Image 1: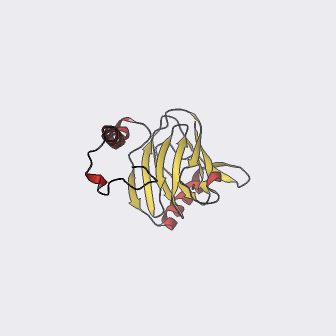
Image 2 (image 1 turned 90 degrees about the vertical axis):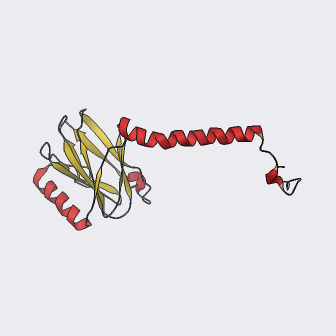
Image 3 (image 1 turned 120 degrees about the vertical axis):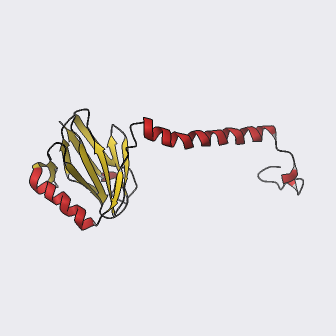
Length: 179
Ligand code: CUA
């Protein structure tokens, strides 16, 4: 039998399975199991998949909370778009909006302090990817994702959208400062 010619015997599925084929099925099956169990394992022992809480939220509600934080704690603005850089008090709730095609605002956090980071999308699905830490969180409209984070290293991090969200997806990058 080949992929091009029809099988020599019509009832080909009753022939004994080839040793090489069963071996490859076995390898593929074991590898599937390895990957399946890696998911919970990596959630517990890895550092990329943070445990988050998720709540339903209306976009206006979330955007009001974000605006209130921006009004209170903006320390400067950056880029031509005048994106506010917000330095909220240590230990507080901080908000980050994902939308076509930007993150808003820019957060400035303090090293060693814990924050509750709230994320939502205003329109479509986006992905919060913090580089180079490689922390990833799906960001969905209508849902508020809350993660408790404690930045342990000062520096400038990149926030990248890692869910394809349209023509401006590649421009959906921002920063996060840790001081
Ligand atoms: Cu937002 Cu890709």
